Length: 145
Image (cartoon, rainbow, N blue to C red):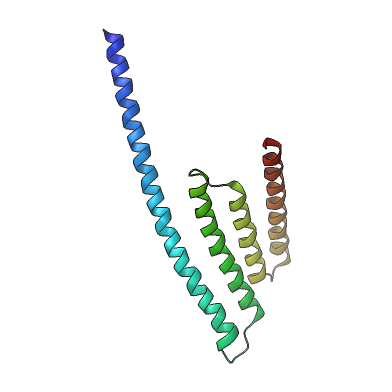
């Protein structure tokens, strides 16, 4: 009799854990959808700012400012792509998209903050490490397929 009672408790525990996991997954999905909407609004706003600086403003625009704006634009775009991949890859974030975002963010940092050569060299080494990581991850994916 005690063994069957233990089995019932384990089943109830498994059902509760399954319910909690499903609830948290749904909450995560809703929050990611909200984040995607917010990022889309920022992407549209950044598009308007870039178009304004290129086409409408009469004063010359700094290339650094324009390049920074374009890289921020790509960061928004990459985060949105990451969210899309999350929903299309069975609720899983592919590693390579985080690496792409990291490389883009470091390039933006180099363009904005390039006064100190040691810092710039360190940022370049960071990009090299990320590219090597991306190569290793893609090689493993090719071997698995």
